[in-house]
Length: 63
Image (cartoon, rainbow, N blue to C red):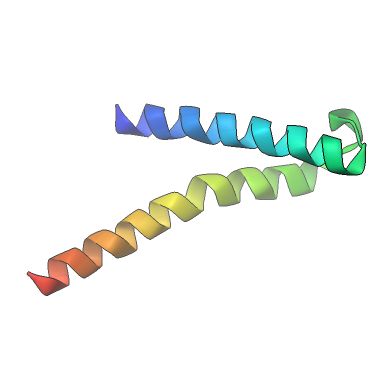
């Protein structure tokens, strides 16, 4: 359940980011380099999970 919630939040974050990117640069989505878009997508998906894992490890160490 939380996994799907995370995917949904990530999708919303990516959409917001792309809208911001478009507003700032005036570049349409079709002109955006899909390689960089994929990297951003991966970062958005991986970073929160990594942070969550690190936080969990720290919590376990303190107990």
